[in-house]
Length: 539
Image (tube, rainbow, N blue to C red; front, top):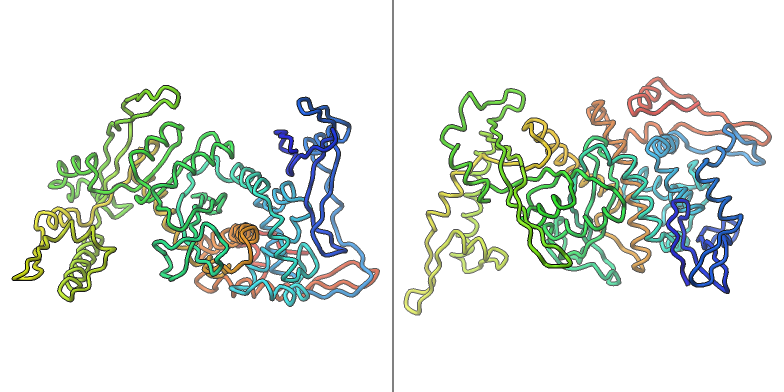
């Protein structure tokens, strides 16, 4: 029987047996090299009343006061050690700065060290499978300090509980997500495994003919660090994910959120839900929306003028305050409440985008027409055919078609325009700056997925999949930190991420029996790299 105790220091399940309550913590037995359980009795429970004991208060006090930090500095050893250290040291420092190490320790206990080591391996060994961990482990200094055989890594993945993950997300979101906009987006991951229930065939963003799952991700706009993900079935569209995201946010206890999303997440229901929960948002809006198109029709003739040109953005810009028709249904009574809420619409026009839109639109029509003539129309294009073509078929003349001129002209007149909608950002320059950061994050995430082996997953069970995905997420946090520092300091002009990590990786760690450790020579170039990555140089 389980007992629910809402205390932040309790990171594992509380179970009850024979009138006693105890914390049941899964951990990794280093000696036996297998998973094990540790029980700490914290009081009595008679089915209705919980009576805490001394252990309960001791653990609570240790959490509130903070455990005394272990003594720092080198520890003598009985064996000779010579391992690569420079790159894993970098990740040690990143995990300290971002709170990754501390939060993993609070949420996963003894599992934290092997989880960190596996995440380090994914970051440093681009695209390598987990079965090669033993070779890397033997030559590198890392948090766990031992090999994790392939079978044992699968067991570790299976021990990563959903409850501990959500507590970790909460701690990370509170560190990074309270004072910045969070980009919300989805990405697909293909799976070779037939055992993943949520792996479905859908519109695959990678073009694979494999079942997939989708990941919904929250990314800090300023920190550019991921703080949360949720797994979705592969056939779920973007627009359906906001409602469940808001439920998750309630669980994470983030009172107010600031979200930035592309127009694939737009729906009236989503906007109303965000307003209902008092969340701020910035979202791309289609020019075909009534609230957008009616204003655009009024201003289009005078939009592209010097008066509306913004030299900082090098775009034509206009902004308006509009009234949103808000509606909310009371869950108990079913009563519909209608109200007016203020929103800001920011309109932008770009000459280059107009040219690109024109080229892209005509290429699409050429493709549709060619497929129609050849008798090979794609069923996925049915909505486009209905929108832009009149198709007739008779026994005598066969299939004939013509273009819907009004629909085409309606699309053509909006070449070059794009619109952002917000309930919190009045300034169009600030709105576009934040939205462009979302685009940068989306592009960089595609690159990071490749190096972390997240394109296609092969696992033996649902539990292993969940655990491996979480370790890859932790690795993504580290990689995102490195990429942000490299972007800001122009390091990509001379390095790829892998070449930079390789440059630091050659620094070695030496230790002999009875003596403290020392490092190999550190060059000025390496010292400068640590400085640019905002990490102190090792000593």
